[in-house]
Length: 136
Image (cartoon, rainbow, N blue to C red; front, side, top):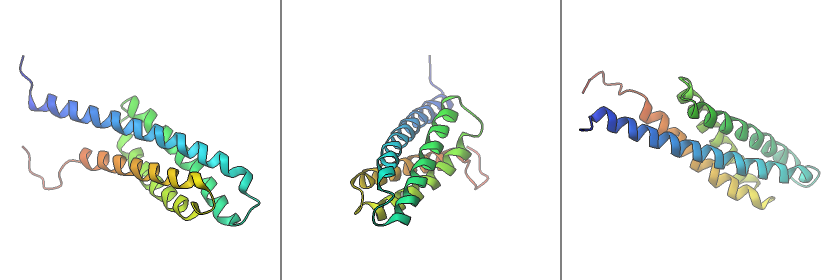
């Protein structure tokens, strides 16, 4: 049995989807831990930053879980949700980086958010057909 180029491409996409699902799940996990740990900090210094960080961690967790679910069931909207996931992960990472001096978990959360954003972005870019209009 010979493997056609399209079959190889399917395996590559499938592998990338699996990697993206794992990245989304890991990001959702750390965002959950980070956000929950900050709840008791809301009365401390950097209150506004803490509140923004908690909200973004919760939003990021939600979109990562949704993206993982949609990719897992091969939703036709997976790529759109992955694009939004990448955007939200980048926002969360930026706020967590700002908040890291006040909350140790934010540094780890920011790293995982950046990793997830990178993988989701790569998935989106690789899933969009070439804009050149040329066919293979």
